[in-house]
Image (cartoon, rainbow, N blue to C red; front, side, top):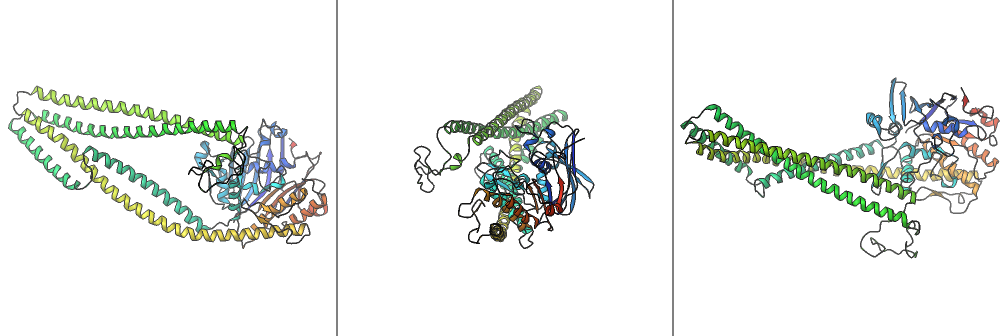
Length: 639
C-alpha cells in the first residue's frame, strides 16, 4: 500500500521566508498560540500537495496578508512516496506544480487542473501523478448526467483534520473548502471512503482496465460496422438493389459486357481512323468524368451526413433551451416552495406515498427526486453549466453550417467540371462530324461510362461486404471476451467486496475501542456502527464536547487500520491535524487525546499536528516538537 512522508517544508518570498527540516517518522508537533501561524503552516503543506487554499487569494474576506502582500512567493516540499524521494514546488497563485525526481534527476511540471497546455503535455494532473504513485485506484463517479474523477483533494478530506470544519460532521467541507456540489455530495463522500478503505488488488484492476479496453474496442468496432453498413446501403440505393445476393455474379457479368463493348469500340475506331491523339483525349475525358462522378457521390453522402448532424445539434440546442428555462423556473419558485424535501409533496406538504416507478401525478414516469436535491447556489451552478453547454452547441452548429456550405460549393464545382468535360467531348465529336463512325462511337461510349461506374460501385460493394463479415466476426469475439472478463471480474469483485466488508468491521471495532477507552465506558455504550454514508452513530445523545474525540478517533482509526498488514487499505499512512481545541472541550480531555496520538510516534507513519500552549506538555511532547511559535517567533519571518 502507498505511504507518504514529508521531510522538509520551505516558503520563499521577497518579504518573508520559512524553513523547517525537522520532520521525521511518527509525530511531528508544531506549537503556537492563535495568530502566530499554526494554520498557515498546514495551509502551506496542503497547498503544495495540490489543494486549493482560499486564504492565499486576493479577494478573500480574511486572507493571510503576509502571503497576499508578498511577491515572488512559492512553497516547496521534500517528500517520500513509497521510498522514492521527490521535491515539489508550487508558486503561490499558480496552478502548476513542479516535481523533481531526485533519483532520476528529472523535472516534470503538472497542472493542478485538467486543462491547459501543461496538462496536454503530460496527459495527467498532479493529482493523477501522486495517486498513481500511492497506488490509489483511478475512479470516475457518475451523478445525473455528469462524471467526476476522484482526485487527491477529495481523498485529502480524510487525511487533513482541520479546525474550521464543524466537528460533528466528521467529513464535509474543510478549511480549504470547495463549493463544488459534486464534491460535497453524499455519493462523493461514500466513494472517497470506499477507495481509502479498499485494498488495491492488482488482479482486480488488471481485469477492470482490461474490460474497459475491450468495451472501448467493441464500441469503436460497432461504430466502424455502422459506417460500413451505411456506405453499403448507399451503394445499394445507387444500384437500385435491395440486397447483396449475387453481387459477384453481377460484377462478373458487368466486366464481361464492359470488355465486349470496349472491343467493339476499338473495332469501330480501326474502321475509320481519326487520330490517336483525339481518341486518347476522349478516353482521358471519359475517365475524368467517371472519377468526378465518384467524387460527387462521396461529397453528396458527406453532405447528407452533415445535414443529419446539424439536425441533431439543433435538437440538442432546443433541449438545452428547455432545460435552462426549467432551471430558471426552479430558481424562481424555490424561493417560495421548499422543493428540497423529497419526503413531502412540494405542493400540499403532505407525506408522499408513492407507488413504485410512478410520479407524484400517478403517471408511469419514474419520479426523479435528483431534480429537487440541490440548493439555490447549486441550481445556479447547474444553470451556468447548461448555459456553457448552450454556447458550445451554438459553436458546433456554426461549424456544421460552415462545413455544409463548403461541401455545397465543392459539389457545385464538381458538377461544373463534369458538365465542362461532357461539353468538351461533344465539341471534339462535333469537330469530326464528317466521320460516319462518330455516332456509333458515341453510342458505345454512352454505354461504357455507366458500366464502368457500375463495375466500380460493385467492386466497392464487394469489399464492404467482406469488411462487414470481418467486423461482425471481430464483434462476436470481443463480446465473448467481454463476457469472460466480466465473469472473472465478478468473482474478483466479490472477493474485493468481502475484503472491504472485513475492513469496515475492523474499522468499527478499532473506533469503538478508542471511544470506550477514552470515556472509560462499556463496550455497549460506545459501540459504533457506520451508516450507508459511513457516518458513525452510537444511538444516544452525547454532549457537544464529545464531537472532538468522535471526529479525531475516526481519522486515527483509519490511520491505525492502514498500519495493519492483514488489512492492506490504501490510506497513505499520513495525517495532518490542525488544532484539536474546539467545541468547548476541556484541556484535561485534550491532553488525554494526545496520549492516543502518541501511540503512533514509533510506528511507520507520519502525523503532523499543531497545538496551542494550553494542551502542550513540554515533558512529553517536547520529544517530537519540530517548532515552537510565539509573538516573538512567528511562522513567517522577514527576509
